[in-house]
Length: 281
Image 1: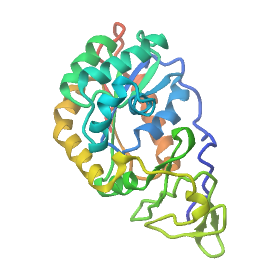
Image 2 (image 1 turned 180 degrees about the horizontal axis):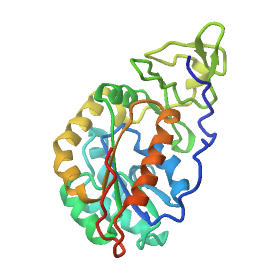
Image 3 (image 1 turned 180 degrees about the vertical axis):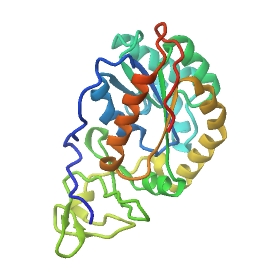
Image 4 (image 1 turned 45 degrees about the vertical axis):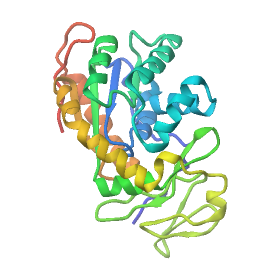
């Protein structure tokens, strides 16, 4: 049976803190929609690191209609990558203001190609490249069901139950599993059908779809990533930890934290920012 689902805002029990870990500079690799933002939010407090979501920096520029935001708005609507020099300038400006250039961060959204990787290596000297993967069909289903609420809070209307997958939707209010009838219900009493989008008007009120989450744009973004990913992933072999997302956060997070702890304990000691040997899954 499916477990009860906690509210989006409720913290998961992530176990003991790894804040004393030598892992201080983390970059996330993975296709759009794989869950980088979700796992960044969960593992950053465990590692004692500040999350940096490059997509949020870009969207803020667009929303505030700054000169930079206007220049990148068209590319974002098409699902194309923001030009390297623009996104690097945004990132470095943010990190300088937050005093993060010497470490203490987990970076979601950069690098996305080999050229960006060279700049990231030179300036940021990452300790760990966490590479997340997921079944492409599931990933596209999640991407097209993603919605934004107030203050860009991310939700997801897809209820995925296929094979071993049991991923309830992420809604503004908690869902409830009814053991008697074997069904999942939203906070307003609507039964949520597996492998379908949530249709409750109260749950979806005020939620919007990002322009780059339209189905055709999602497929374009994934194809772009697939073309660029192999050299990028290979580039970080020396500090890479591969992890497959094969179920919901409740099922995957404990395994991911265990893999991170193993990486921390087995990494070869070296000078600050030196390559380390990853614990591969």
